[in-house]
Image (cartoon, rainbow, N blue to C red):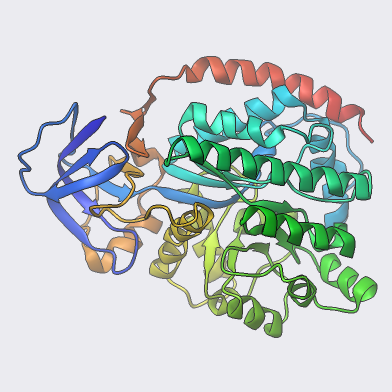
Length: 444
């Protein structure tokens, strides 16, 4: 498939945030092949970009697709006075209720919602304790059918069945990674990749850490793990292991340039230094932190490879970057829109890493993957290099998303999904959600 976007404004969301008017972009198969003025090329699909703005697709660097059917969940729950009670009364009941059908519709819904909001890649962190074996293949199926680029893994934990659950979770991570490897033998270009998932250090004993390291070595993938989302995780680590969290992970050689650590609100300066030394990615999730009332991460300026996620609060990164910026300013922080746009775009480097750097993402440039978003944004003031990041945070929103191209395929055009019946999926997901909530309500 070849696509030609005519006469469009190019807005690079990676520093130095260039803005170039009146450009043509030619896409062949999955890559950007040519960029210029009045390109003399033939294409199977021509898109008029007049008055519109083209940006690299946004990346959600940490999501929980299992939350896809949780919106407005109607269950009876006990009071939630701390973070652990929030997990026990809400999220851990939901994930235990998930089966194959609800996992599948969660994946479809989260992928659709992300694409509508201009997100072209999602890094997922899955949990379904009653349906572990094969669950990642179901997540990947939903991603592929909708057409989003994805990375997924299973959340290894002992919280329900002890070491048996640890072993099952590790086995699923390895199984899915090998499934991706088999797909790669047949074709070079895959849409969904694997990581090695883990819940949080307070639900993973040392034996589980050894198994996670073994999974890393066997698959060549990096770990994706929550750390210090709440003070409890750090306190538990000191009480049970007499170590800081990052130190404990490093003792098992789990930290490297492909690792993704999430939250980290209660890390010490020495831990930040260590994760930077190991070149780990680190995901900030402001909406989730605010919702769970766990506090605010004041280390943001100190983290080298900071990326932006939602922790299951949808896939809308236009919303997330706004909340990240305003919450930071409210807390007295000194970072500006350009700083947060750099953090958002860095999610592309994370996805590149998860895909073993088989391609390049995050720029509108020849040779890069065609993961692009066309915006119908009518700027009320000049949109130029010096103020582009400010427009992104203060003006552009998911309402501006007109067309989305992922891996060279148009998946959303004129705000409507291509080659998929989204209305039918949403209708079926509502019925599936009712059944899921009934199951979750019975779990105590």
